[in-house]
Length: 167
Image 1 (cartoon, rainbow, N blue to C red):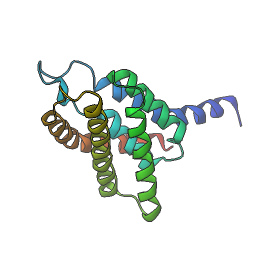
Image 2: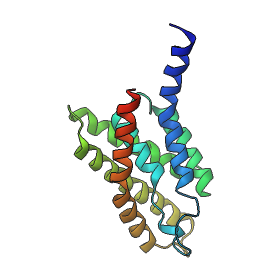
Image 3: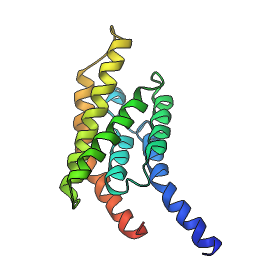
Image 4: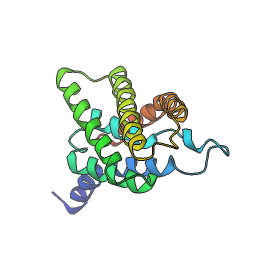
């Protein structure tokens, strides 16, 4: 094994984590119109669930915890809320994947939708316990719907990249 192939194999194993972190940053960029910052799509969650479905060996527990802590810091929430959400997403998706032999686009879309529900439920319940007086639930519904509408685009782009990289 040459040094070049060793470096490429390690880069390919880190790329899913890097894609997820980059999409988490992109989801917080000011690309939405003024006043609609609360309903930005959860691109990092879509990416996280996609990579757990298609390459669970690259999205083990440690990368999921790193992504969760990164999202906690990025969103400015209490440390541990996004981390707990990410851990629950991985746990549920891995339990579902045990029963599925062949993964297709419908299974991926279902897992992405389920992970969005888990993320929003865990974050809304824990944040409403911490910040009871000023928590907006209607924005969560729209954030879920926007994320669900955007998710097929992200899924198709990632499937294309997965086939091109053949990792």
